[in-house]
Amino acid sequence: MKIKSKPFIMKLYSTFFLAMFICFGLVAQKKELKSIQKLVDNKSYHEALSQLDANSSLLESAEAKYASHYYYLVGVSKQGVKAFSEAIDAYGKARATESGANLKKYSPLIEAAESALSTDLVNNAVSLNGDEKFIEAAQTLYLAYTLDKENNQDYLYFAASSAVNGRDYENALAYYLSLKDLNYTGISTKYYATEVASGEENEVDLTSYNIYKKSKDFTLREELTPSRLPEIVKNIALIHLNRGDNEAAMAAVKEARSLAPKDIGLILTEADLFIKMGDEQRFAALMQEAIEQDPNNAILYFNLGVVSSNQGSREEAITYYKKAIQLDPDYEATYLNLASMILEGESDIVSQMNSLGTTAADNRKYDALKAKREGLFLEAVPFLEQLIAINPTSVEALTTLKNIYGTIGDTPNFKKYRDLLESL
Image 1 (tube, rainbow, N blue to C red):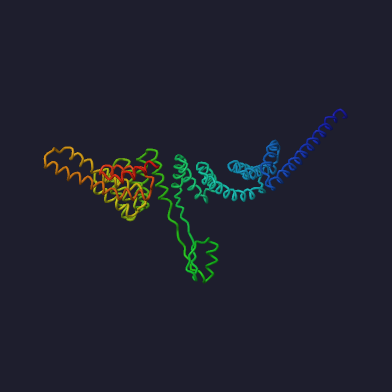
Image 2 (tube, one colour; image 1 turned 60 degrees about the vertical axis):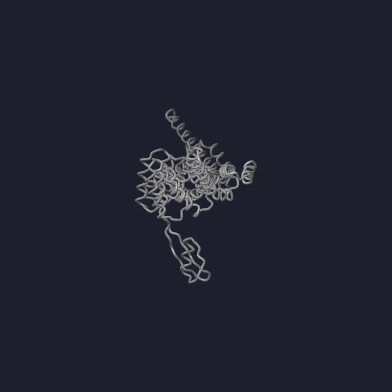
C-alpha cells in the first residue's frame, strides 16, 4: 500500500503547485493590468502602450476578463496617440473576447469610447484637410463612417470630397457609388429663430429651438437643406470623365439630370462632356439652357463667346464677351478674349492691303483699309486698358497695347507700355 500511495501523493503535490502557479499568474495579470490602467487614466498613453507591449505574453494564458481588459486598454491608448485604425481593431478584439465568454464589463465602455472616437476622427480629418493632406483625411473620415455605417453616412460623403481633393479618384468613385447605392441625400433640417424685438434671424441648434418654442420673444422656422444626391451623381460623372470613360460619364449625368433637371452644375457638366466630344452645337444649346436658369452668370456668356469664336461666329462671340464683362467686370480672361476677337479681323484687312496695286484707286482703297485697321486697334484698346487697370502686370495686355500704338504711330503711348513691360 505504501508503494502504491507514493504516486498519489506526488500527483497531489503537482496539482497543488499547478494551482499555486495559476493563482500566482492571475494575480500578476491583475496587478499588471491595474498598473497599466492607472497610466491610461493619467493619459500616459505612450507609456501604457510600452507596458502593454512588454506584457503581451499575458494574453497566452489570460482569462477572458483579463484579455478583454488588455485589449480595451490597447484601444484607449491607441486612440490617445491617434492610431485610430489600431484602436478600432483593439476594441473589436475586446468586444469579441467578452462576447465569447458572455461578459459585458468593457463593451459599454468601448461603446462610449467609440462615440468619442468618431469625434476624434472627424477633428483629425479637419486638421488634415487644413494641412492639405487630403488622402489621409479621406481615410480618416472613412474610418469614422465604418464605426457606425447607419448613422455616419455624412462622413462617407466628406471622405469622398477629400479623396477628390487629393486626386484619389479611385477611392472617391468607390465612396460616391456607395453613397448612391445607399440612396444617401444628406438632407437635414436647419432651425432658425427670429428675435421679435430686433427682427434679427439666426440659425440655432435643436435644443435652443425647442426652448424658444416656449417663448413669445421669437418667431421660428425650419428649413430642409438641398439633397446632395444630384451632386454625388455629378461627381461620379466627372470622375468617369477624368478617367476618359465618356460613356459612363454621360450615363451618370443623364441620371443626375433626371433627378435635378434645372441644376446649373449638372447642365454645365453635360455641356463639358459634349465639348470634350467635339459637339459644339450641343454644348452651345446647353449653355443657352443654363443661361435661362441663371441669366446673370458671366461665365456662361464667356463660354458661349469661346464656342462662338471656335465656330467662326466673330460678331456673336464679341456680343457674348461684352455681356460677360457687363456682368463681371473683374474677369480678366474675358478682356483678353474680346480684344483678340476684335483684332482677329486685322489679318483679312492686311491681306486686302497687300493685294492692292499702285493706281490712284488702289491708293484710295489702301487708305480706307488702313483707317479700318486702325479702327479695329482703337476698338480693342479700351478693353485692354480696362484689363491693365485690373491687373497692371498682365504681360499679354501690355504687349498688345505696345504693338498697337507702335503700329498706328502713337509714340508716347508706345513708349509708355514698352517701359511698363520692361519694368516687370
